[in-house]
Image (cartoon, rainbow, N blue to C red; front, side, top):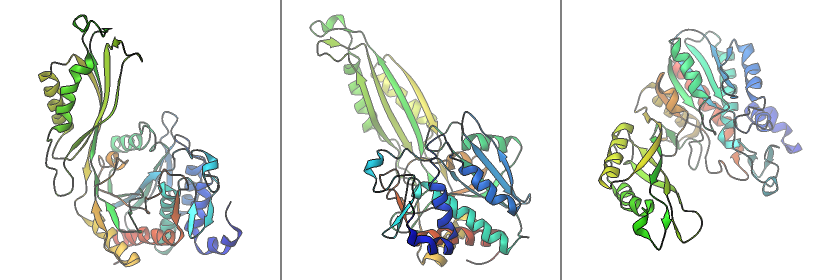
Length: 389
């Protein structure tokens, strides 16, 4: 429940008011909680043409104003992770609360405040410059926190099929580390996940000559896999790493040699390596260790925006609004930027402080909410109106 003392604050800060309205709508993946309809309704009076690309129970919105280049797109997700035990929160996760200088609620940082800032930044910009050059678009999904199989990727496929490309895209992920504006994500590492099943022969531990232990076969291969030097990274990315996340084998007793061992591992890789080269090197290790195995791979590619008008515009907007120089970073996990990069040469991520995302009592600082919208608006002013930050 929003504190009554916040009434004046809401009147003075439309971004805060919209963020509260979005947080109050439960939208755990793949539900959107009505958030997409709310945002589409806000954009319609501005001349945006909404299109829905729903797929597999996921709701996706593409809304565009204008038909000319350059096209500036704001992208993000309305879905959130589950709130967890409600009793663990100081206030219920889907009842937004203002206290101690913060807005609390699931999605406050990841990423409903960014969505609210997108909308109000666009409203302010279009109101002041209704005849701006180029186009503005929003690409929103309810499937980013889940498997991401039917969300942004489906919109990108549809846009690509009709030859529609973006010139610039800002994904509203919470990128800031300690204060709003200190970090821009200008790329992400690729992710290559594997499910490896090593086959053996079940038997009694007292008669190992009559069995074949897949754990014993796996051990030297696993040691080589995690010790290997894959690459040196580059100026934007750290070296590729391999991490084992799960190992499962056995029947639950101590006198049975298992017949199979399953291992889950993951590469987070720099563009200097490819998914295919990593697969090939892993396969060579398994052959040397004479494993009897099968393997399934899941892959998302890296992307990088090293420089260009978008990085320059966002950096200048942060400097003018927050008074700091933003650092470029490619740290962290994956985002939907990996899909958007297929139809856009300049993709970056920028949003509020990420310290509480996915946590109990997720929150965003009140004094960062209006400046976030101001930064987004200044980017539009630079890219579509030619105005300095």
